[in-house]
Image 1: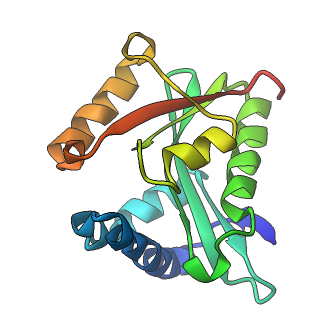
Image 2 (image 1 turned 90 degrees about the vertical axis):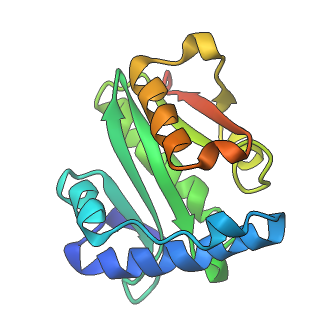
Length: 171
């Protein structure tokens, strides 16, 4: 599986991946999340134009998974990782995270961060296996606190969420 920067032509495919991957939330009694609209094309384009969007692509160069991120504080925040269910369980999400870690670490970032659902198997438990650890409230930076407030305003606080950190000491 090859990882490359997202092209503008990929953006509708990323939306499709997000919709299909999101349907899995029905299986964990989170139908509101499963029914969420994908990120608008303009928002995805912002990440793509900023050089903060990557896709794992198949042999035909078609995205099967993607990651978008943003620079915050002294690190890089993972905004979204979505893998098409047909490509799940192949370490593609981990490969995208490792790709971002190598790039961010090479640019001097101290850590990757993310926010995620605490008890969804492919969320916090998965990220623990990918080298992330939960953050305490005292560790939250101003940018992470702002992200948490934005998520709460969107209604995501209905389910337990956690901020996580992956140090980039090795890069």
